[in-house]
Length: 444
Image 1 (spheres, one colour):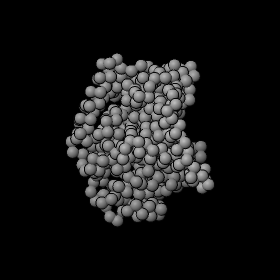
Image 2 (cartoon, rainbow, N blue to C red):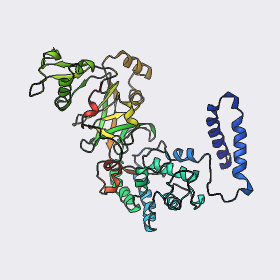
Image 3 (spheres, rainbow, N blue to C red):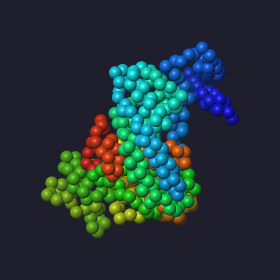
């Protein structure tokens, strides 16, 4: 199929999707609208408009960046070496200009001399095609390029030059080159046989890849550890999934959080389905405990399975000396946050049931339907995998893959040696999440 036909097909689909909300009476309108729009764009007398418009540009921005190419693998060092060569060329040619917000603010529809700097910056990094030209207008081509840049840097693809996007744009090319070189060493260390099926948790990217036959079949958003309670690097195997897990409160949470809460609200344990057990496994009634004593009671605080359980429906166990694991969470809204670095070291997984279904694929009779049925019962159910699946927790802040798209993430644990790479850990409008262990404390 020719490029022209591809363009027309994508544009028609985009307009058809937009037209759905207009009701059934407008079924025929998208085709006519597309024809009219295409006539205007292609008109010989159109001239050199500054505010160019491309209906399919925004959709192409993210489609061309998000792929099923894994971060790790035997070919990964070669891909990142190719990116290093490209960035060495950029540095040799003087890098890219610094972008300023401009008098009018840089957003689609505005015109400002600062847009020319922005265009030049995006062209040099390959996010904006050079045939888009130079002008003062923030048109849809620039908007598309900004979204592509944002996706490559793990930022929301909204086309808005907010605080984090501007800071990422203004990281010098020399620093990005150094970042690629630093991560080449990390990628090379993981270039062996990772297994036909494996799970990769990229801590700085705060996401998880389920990889099969060198292809990403699932990509899950994650929440990982804060800088003062980092998630550890792991080379291990997943051996167990627990549906409807119990949660046992760590001693530190009992002392720092639960006991003070019980002093204020004696119903806290009951409302959160947390029961007390002594060393012989006998249940202890909360009303028999002196909550004002100098020391917290020497008891096990165990939360029953259920929707308000700190791990919600699922826990994924792998061999490690740090007691870390992956799990579900009742606080699903946290996955929408830009900065998802606030756990106590364990990794929370969005859409965890998709990952569990993939993990248990070779462990009958655990189909998706059976998993959902058991979760609905609320019964604690440990499941040993028929075949353990390798899992790797890695720290990769810059990489490239088969598609040649160079990706960067913030250096959240400050291991890359450049302060400007830790963009989201120093400033911003996000609120402090509280105690480093607050993420596991039931909030009912």
